[in-house]
Image (cartoon, rainbow, N blue to C red; front, side, top):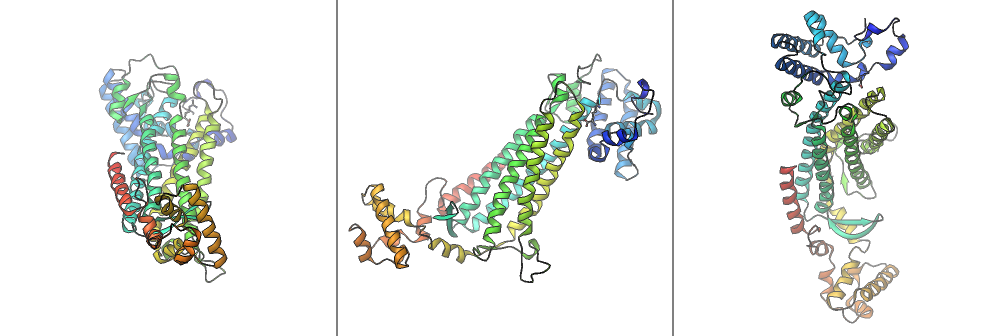
Length: 458
Ligand code: ARG
């Protein structure tokens, strides 16, 4: 017998039973569903809709159901559709007719909303903690590599010398923004929808503020129709997750590139690499590739969810049951990726000498030669022209800028003197970029301190 069977003359077709059942994926909400129900029953007892004694018996029954589920004693029933009706059925089996009072002044529509919000709040805290650990790992690595010079790139062409610390700190900025976005998402998730009922509230004298307090929500919904149909918080999470994945994916792309024999800037630890079944020499960056690949599915989760919600009329529609798999997949994927990404980065070996050597090639100091002339009063555009010619000359001679003789420099412009050679050493070029947010060790030291401060507040 269905919990809603009274109005029906026939049983549900078995195909429909399977088709609309969500228990296979919403069972992960069981703990939050039970917590929500205990709070709801307690509130009903407080306001006198049921007696306080009844409320306590229901709460006790629900605690036993929770223990049964956690003890592996429960097999969920597909015919009971979803986690909400499964729990109610288990409760009634345990405490009898009183269990049937639990759903007073409540609908599965506000119930599922409260469950998902509670679940996401917990997951947001966990993901935030993972991001924090990753940022700390990167900050520690940056601290060790403040003087590790490497080429900075634009268009994948060597551009100007930077430091590895500076490069890593670029990712720290991204991840700090991600943490901030999650905190923002948390605020909008932290709204308690019970009291909204199916869509039109209830005639019972509920105290949703009390339920919110019991469940640790910061605020209560202000419109019952919005409360049961709002999934903005889930979309926001998926968007935040998509950005986190995009950041990890960009980082992974660099790790894959840096691990090539051609770059050889890093070597991944054996524990975070895999081999080939045919080519004995291979050591592949599969972890980084898989994270890059999984970015696609999180984008898909976001697009899927947005598309499910598009065009839905007020208020609850069964389409909304489709929110969960997208949300859960985004949560699982981000957590799984963060879990392996951090140790992969923490254990990689940095080939400092290869980085420095790459920085010395590719004329990464050409801007510094131009700046040298500008500091001696040559207009920048003119300096640019002179150095462009110097590079062309070097390419013909098979030399780099440090290898030109003073005579050759003077041939390009009489303004050059012996001090040109100190001005264009790549270590010097990186260290001289002391501007706020720049790659110089002292600028990076300040950026690291600022990031550590920020970590305390977001
Ligand atoms: N399993 C449903 C969902 O996830 C719960 C709400 C169902 N409400 C309803 N009136 N059918 O959305």
